[in-house]
Length: 396
Ligand code: SF4
Image 1 (cartoon, rainbow, N blue to C red):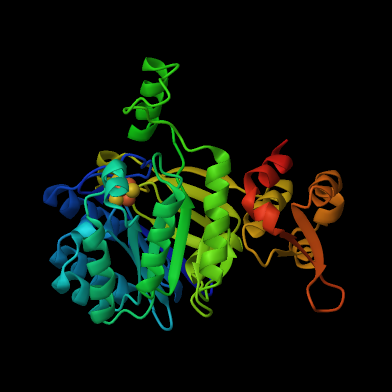
Image 2: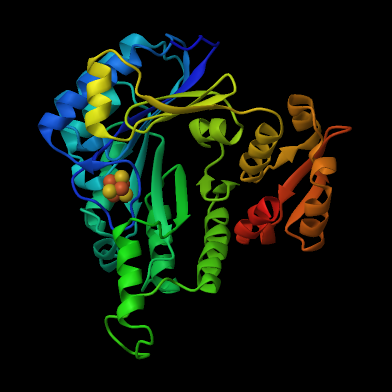
């Protein structure tokens, strides 16, 4: 068992989905009631090994947590809420619009979950079909409205841009529809092509079969050009900020007061426990993660063994590097002096050459925090648009 600390964040992973999406590389397999029941039994055993501590944030993600049947989900909530002290806790569940009805949503809210993050991805039916989503655009819209009716006052919508075949007009319509539904939070992620996914296979198959496809070939599928992806992101920032949203992290926008406390804890390099298949934890400077093999996970926990597969103490230079990488994702940036105090090294000295080049390229800037003797390092607008270049610079 890990030593207790004052308060913590807890992530719980539910590794089941009704169908695999084309682009997905999350730890998740196809849902079956039998597997889900065995998994929840194992998960509860693991949760009992986590110190009973007040929770600052709770995040139930996946996979698709809402793929679980209402009774099993309720049973899990009762277990968690009995185990931990939740007071002013931000408790989030990830939800797929194709797995929710009125009863399930009402139960989730009545159980004490106060934030719902809905995986909409697009309000364009063709794009949803391409991505392999199990829901329609209308169902996604209905679920946002139904969530509010069920009592949720903190609703997040996840969207994806850079989908092959998507044009700017379609992305604009998706953003407009999202805003018209009055969510408190919008995450807009660029579609990434991860090895091992259906999307990766599809794009490579086409490259191999059609090394020089005809310009108007109807079955030609290729990734979106980087320039167009950047244009879409640029428009996203303009549109959402002009509608009252604050861009507080590269991909995350929220109304004031609705920033995700759980995710901010990650970017601030705070401590968190993770339970479930493949779940990661970061406790007292140590990162560790569980096996991502479902059978092994269930087997280990049923034998009262740990599911932890790998662990590493993160110290010195690596810890500083992590803090830089994670902190720069936040638009408020990093307070240089606070980082120096926490990690014993001043990043302005340690990364002098890289930062000079990034400043010359206007990708990062150093500004006063408003407090005397405090300097903030943050991404510029150009740095946000080209954040991959910024991070690559530190890795080179
Ligand atoms: S619903 Fe989410 S976790 Fe499940 S396959 Fe699709 S993207 Fe992956």
